[in-house]
Amino acid sequence: MSDNEGSAELTSLRQSIDNIDAAVIHMLAERFKFTQQVGRLKATTGLPPSDPEREKVQIARLRVLAEESHLDPAFAEKFLNFIVAEVIHHHEQIASTGTIDTA
Image (cartoon, rainbow, N blue to C red; front, top):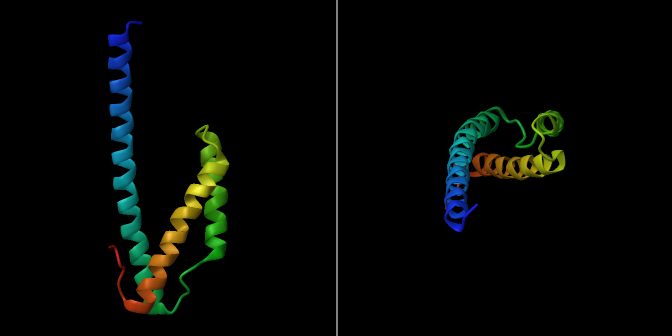
């Protein structure tokens, strides 16, 4: 493979990665729209911001999906834990202020 061919392939691969990154961001934005609705519902019904049993089930489910997709389950769990922590933070903000600080 020539340098030009390698460079063109690298550019193409990076474009595909960029497209996937954009899709991930859009999907996360949609996910957070729904979790914010959950947060508002929890706040109006007096439910706690965190649901440890639901989180446990989701982690187990995601680990299986990761294994089926040949993705490191430990990485998938860390990723979900990061997202869940942010969701809980949002739910706490909604419960205390009625809104989310996105700045």
